[in-house]
Image 1: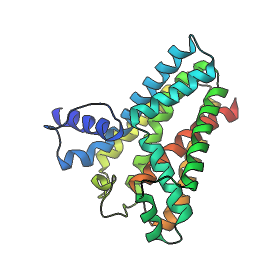
Image 2: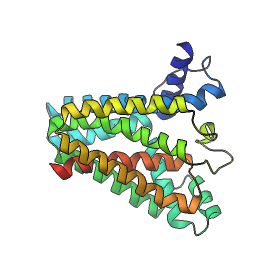
Image 3: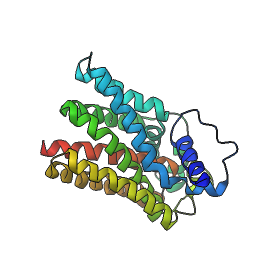
Length: 252
């Protein structure tokens, strides 16, 4: 259990900016297995964001409560996934070749493609949540954050890492069957809870849209890169999260 706790702590440290110490817990092997807890970390981020929304909505208009919830998620993760989304669009949009795209994606500066993608993603996210009934927002945030991290884990399991180094290097060798099962089981529990909280047809729309967004984002970067990077994992997470929200709204 100490080993599993260490992997969870490393997953939290990897995906968030929460001040957890892992000096005595870190090993390269444990870090490579940390993705098994990415959906669980996403669930916790989503629950915290939902709590911020609920508290803010008691005294503020719903739009401001949504913006505060989204902002809280950005603060907890250090905009980790959003940065990956922006870098992915900068690289794919501005790089005519694979090598040039990878070079652009390593540049810390924000380009036109990345800025446009980032603004669109945040606007879609906030707009979708604002359009939901407040109770749905509290339920959608934890589920979306959980399953969208599983979406990124699926990329690790089914694609190949294309850099020699970078944020995705710890999982460059792929993910074990055990880790994939644990991550999938966590996501499945989140979906099962959603089946109780949401109308079934609405949840099905959300899952279909989630899968469509996952595939669409991969079709955007994989043909040019021949695999994934740490940045593209963030892009997949963002697309999948937004896809789930839009699917719920399509039925509503």
